[in-house]
Length: 59
Image (cartoon, rainbow, N blue to C red; front, side, top):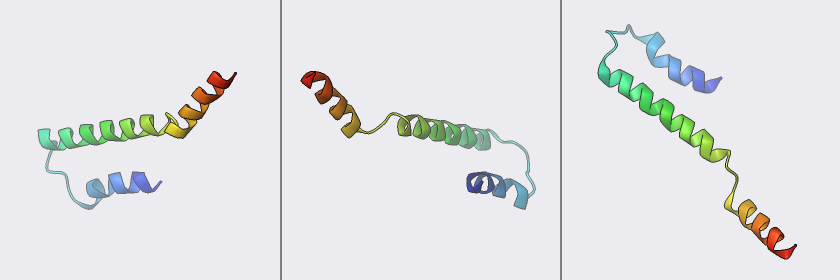
């Protein structure tokens, strides 16, 4: 909910003067960065991966 408020606040407090290419680029870059962060956070930690490898080698 807080992320939605942060993203919506600039658009609700001032009148938009039009959609500029710079504004579109900033939004697209932000969405891509957010998606990459979510994908990397779902991968798991390095410690989990090394433990899995050690477990497979021991078996």
